[in-house]
Image (tube, rainbow, N blue to C red):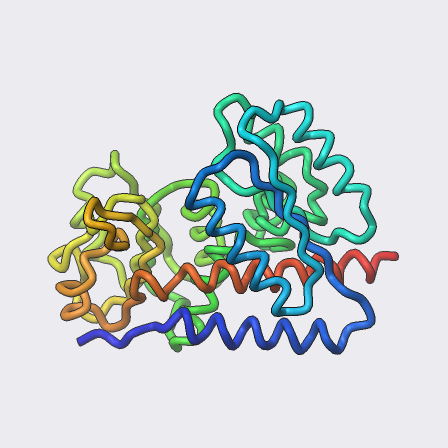
Length: 281
């Protein structure tokens, strides 16, 4: 049976460390989260982030906007937050209404306050091996791998999914850690075969329980980034957990795996952004 990589426990330790650092600092980091619309899942995520930030001693501000908010109005709010000296981190909760151009919104955020790590400047720094603010989910995954004692250098790592939010930055972080990295996706030929060659498999494709045990190399480390709600209300990942856990060497659960680490890394990014900004003044 695979060893369980407990993201909930590790995230609690990281949040406590951020809380200690904030308490010892001579400033209070400020985080602004912008929520557009009434998406139920997004509302839950925003409440979770707000609560975690406050518990860590971060001054958290949530700006709730109706779904009919225009792009110009949203950009004006972001401009105000960019200029607000009390705000160190800006996060625009995704998804956005279709009437809003996501790229325009992301590029409008001050890259030094981009705690999601999505701004093209931060993406470029990461691709160049000089990470500044790193997307929270891939950052959390790297922390889980290191905490679990996984030997990344020289390992074959496969990232299943090529999104700009998880897949691509995840590959950049793994390459920086000297892994041999492959990005696979729905168009990959012999997808199962590619997965079987991986010492480290990171699934972020958004398809419930798509990866089954026969896709897994015996003893591999399996990180499940997916979170999918089934018709019966259950939350499952992209990995068929029970069967895969019998074959893998280490595995993350869903829920309780990567999700808590994403929130904890958001707090760490906010503290990092606050420290960098103040060091430059």
